[in-house]
Amino acid sequence: MGLVVAWGLCALLWHIFVCIPVQSFWTLEAAMTSLCQKSDAFLLVSGITNVATDVILVAVPIIMLGYTALPLQKKIALAVVLSTGSL
Image 1 (cartoon, one colour):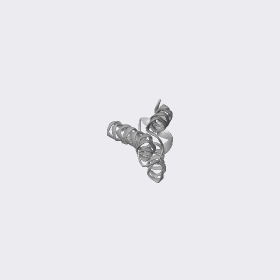
Image 2 (cartoon, rainbow, N blue to C red):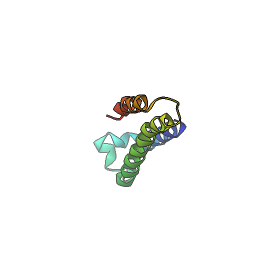
Image 3 (cartoon, rainbow, N blue to C red):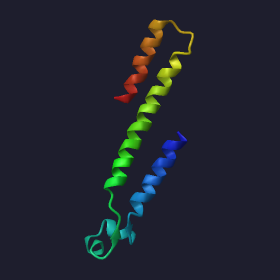
């Protein structure tokens, strides 16, 4: 959870300060004379990181079901219920 919050905060700050001065990100006149970083690489890494954390957050509770003392039928039912969170 802390990793997701830290990554979200980094992404937020990057999107705010991608251009110097900041207002040039949304103002066309200021964008002509500003310095903006290319966002292609960051957006790719951001997407990969978001997918990876989503998979981990869905997989951990399902893996934990294997260590419970529930019957197999209930484990499968709970895994299906928990998997619906990924939709």
